Amino acid sequence: MFVIWSRWAPPLERQKLLSLCFSGSVLGIVLTYPTVGILCDLYDDGWKYAFYLSGIVTIIWCVLWYYFVYDTPSQHPRISKLEKMYIRHCLKKDIPQEEAHTTPWIAILSSPAVWAYVIGHTAVGFHFVCLIALAPRYLQDVHYFSNLTAAGIVAITYIGFFASCNLSAAVYDKIVARKICSGSVARKTGSSIGLLVPAVLLIFAGFLNCNHSTQAVVILAAINTVAGIQFGAGYLMNVYEIAPQHAGVIFGFASTITSLSAMAPLTLIAKLTTSRLRSGWQITFLVLSAVFVLSSVMFILIGSGELQKWAKTPEDIKYRMSELKVSRNNEEISRLSNRSSPVDIQESQ
Image (cartoon, rainbow, N blue to C red; front, side, top):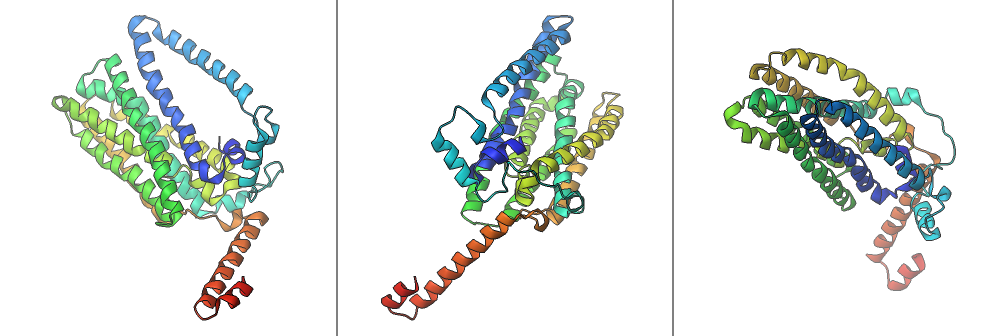
């Protein structure tokens, strides 16, 4: 997705398009959980039909993908010349996408900004792996919801994730465009909100008993809604800011680390919740909260929202030099306007 959008999405639209793209995975959760719950409730071997249905939907998606998606705008036979020209013009300062480039692995592995991204990715990965997989079980163990009801509740709570993901992306774009603060400050703020607020709410959820089931559902919905900021204004798009031409590689590397490291907390949580008592869930939520807080602190300390030196291309340098030249010319015109006649200013321009 990162590689495709780097060749298709103009910079000013990239944040919104990527947020919309990745938030689609949440819609999958919203649709899948209740569907699987219904199938398992209706049929003794409902799991079999759940796998069949998922496989069929995936095949249909593949057919649509192969028909509509092409690597670059120049290869697409069904878009207008005007749209192709617009995309090329918007991406003209980016590294030529058709050309191969060497991946600077040493620079990537020694970059604090990259590791901040990996840490943020891991924390959000824990959120998805642990909460998506275990939230229905928590609602059944502690609040005594049925399997079908618990699945439906979990699905509904992720509607807020979808909404906040896309709204926060739009807000982030406006903040950066109006230069209210730097990209680093905006990105770290979004990441902190998306991690620290769920960490606090998880602790509260752990201390709720079956007499507070409504509050538990509200807290789960709030956790997922706030966590959506991570996809819109948090860590996810940060890879495009620190190293846009290596975004796909860094994202793949971060996803690999996240997948491998997720095995440990899943094993731990499975042992903690074996008894199906509230005390085990309290410890589970405390562990997840600690991971979120630690990840937020690390992202604040070593994260960045600026293009890294090792990721700069000749095109970036030329573009920056042209910006500096324009800035100096504007300063010179402004200085002359304070002490010169209109004729002098016109000659200077």
